[in-house]
Length: 366
Image (cartoon, one colour):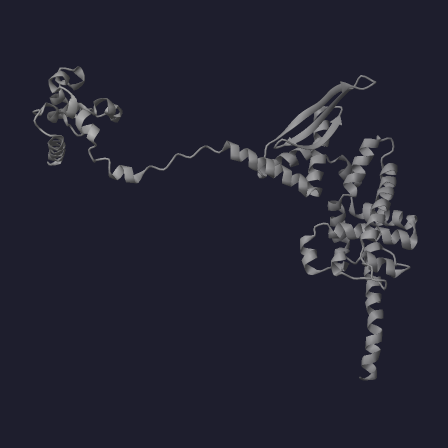
């Protein structure tokens, strides 16, 4: 190997580190003191890296530390920016500024996302990776240069240059509308169940509501108005939907059980075989049919099953159920077997049936 190649290999790590120093300066606005903190902050767990002791080497621990530092620094800045505002307002404003979505957008804007080392698949599927890296970067800044550096970075580099605090603070996020939109998109039932309605020591009304989705208990909230309480309940429910897969599973399991109960019973398919053979004349039809066009009249076959063999024909001929058969035969489209009811008694049962078949098929001819 040539001497030049050896020197280039030695210089390569220094060149890469120099590039990292330059990139971090563009991101933070100042140079690091100890670059090792920032290298860890930019290492996602998907890389599978380990230290000399074999332990995982990634930014999760720095993410934990940075989250705490962000709450402190942003809370401090918001406290100074809004003198006289109540605790609830300050907390809500800080929450908006340090949400994962907000931090992810900031990471993209300052170029931090491009520096994160991760597997390609993890980068495409992890929507929180950029926001987590931002928290880890703040943790690295705190370990490297202290709380004052964190305050300077968040106040001068981030909030003053990239975020309109007033716009963020006074913009109301309609969590209820977002939740309703989600339930409609997924076709699940949702309502708000009132938990309480009372008054505090000063006589101000207090309301409590809980979200119910497909009968599954969601988030709850309270406030000095129904709107405020439902907003808080909706916000908590949305957070659970994002963080608790088992909560979503319970909702769709309940939906599945409900839809099964609401399904209408299907009608039985028609018996085609029966339709093919319904022209066959049954023995009971031979003896008892009156020629009526209504099939319901044939349900009494059993009452007349012995007519041709044991009954007196003259007696039945006087019965009103068997009168005027000739009139029926002129107007009915059904088989008219009335003409065989007055056959001589000496005809056998087989002769009667044969006569009925002949009469029926004779009517079908044009």
